[in-house]
Length: 467
Image 1 (cartoon, helix red, strand yellow):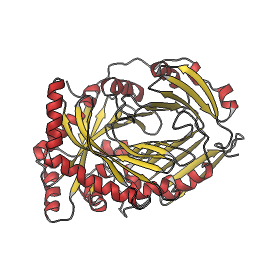
Image 2 (cartoon, rainbow, N blue to C red):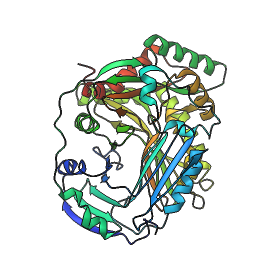
Image 3 (spheres, rainbow, N blue to C red):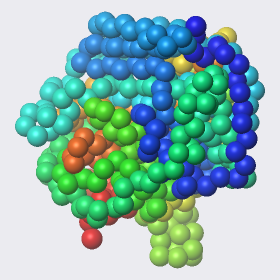
Image 4 (cartoon, one colour):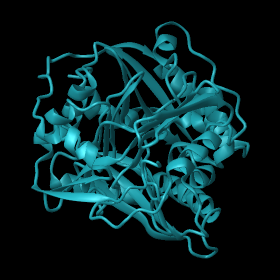
């Protein structure tokens, strides 16, 4: 039996604190948490969590593997080689179905990540060169896509505090009421991570910026998002890292996926794609400036950011790219820019954010949407294919989860995915944290380095890497 076909059952839990649930969540098998700790423009108003998945899709290294509980206790498995997005669509088709109305936007389905390199087939790129040494050991076997399938979810409305248990089979309710099990997350041992390696040195990063500017000058690209990764050792466990980040940097699209072989902790402020029925939305971030010391200085810096011609040009190019991408799957003429440059405030920086919306044509699958839009333009550049090719030449490490997308996919095709920035991949006591920024013709290399420092200050301080 398809595990998503039994009727949806909803159990109100009353007002409930997410902090009280985290210890219980740690007792569940292969749990997940998608946390909205900051409501910006109405996009951060649900916490979602669960455990005990009934299926899995994992892909990497040119191979994929899937499993699915048939609803009778038997697990069906399959594996193969080739385009992981084709295999992902076949897996989704096996459990896709209409979804009854519920108070929460997500009542069960796939949760996890689609990594940046999952798009290699879309853009006809060769695989990233395998790094060596400690970096190679870290990335060995790290999936490009990792999704788990859940048919029970606890959802908390952050505006009211009310919680709901949403499930489709009473045997799970009776056997695994994990949120009532109690339990605590291990106390913070105060671990401070120390750097092991950089994917690219300051000097190399500055040279790469100048190379991007050279290519802009000859017309091969207009904008490229250039990133670099930091390999750390002595990193706290994923639960502790998530707790630290959520305290210092609440965001609308936080995530904790404490899985193997690679755990993921994300403090992302950016929405990649949100689908509800035939409506689709993307909210690219382009434009960053450090916060001021008080409200008056914040206002002045916000006005400075909105007047900055370079930052506005970056955002305008990405808006055009996103309009084009959504146009591939939307009704002609329906794609509109509803906000051109909204100023948003986060713990350490101010951002300018655009909103692009459209009406879907027909009923495209989640993979159809990914093929049209992935990876997000704000973390590639424009034109997208040329920017991605440039990135492959200039960045020596694979991005994996970073600048891919984390979130959920529903059986009816609705989804909500972030852009996985401000994100750590954790393996044992080691982690990779990456940072990036857009390079345009007007970029000043030293300023770009300073922008990376501003973006990373809060999360690296929480890791103990900065005073």
